[in-house]
Length: 77
Image (cartoon, rainbow, N blue to C red; front, side):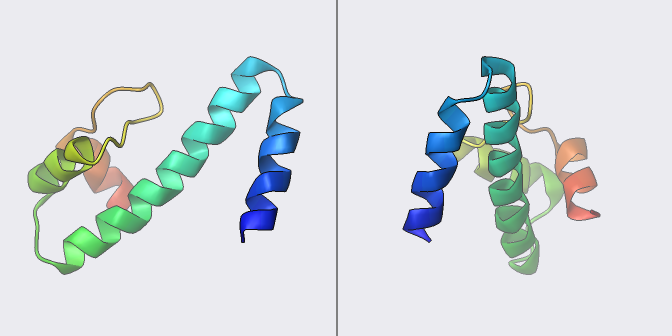
């Protein structure tokens, strides 16, 4: 897995900045989705999950804190 990340980051540096930002935000989005799923299994509601995401330094694609409605949309994907 680490080798794949090394290759990914080398490729990432060759891309324009806006594409780098987009790809990194997509990776963040995937991690957030997995975390959201685990918190739903623990019985948290969308507002509580948004707070947990903020506490764990997750940001939305615009670099801002998640809101409950965004969590709800990710949970249904």
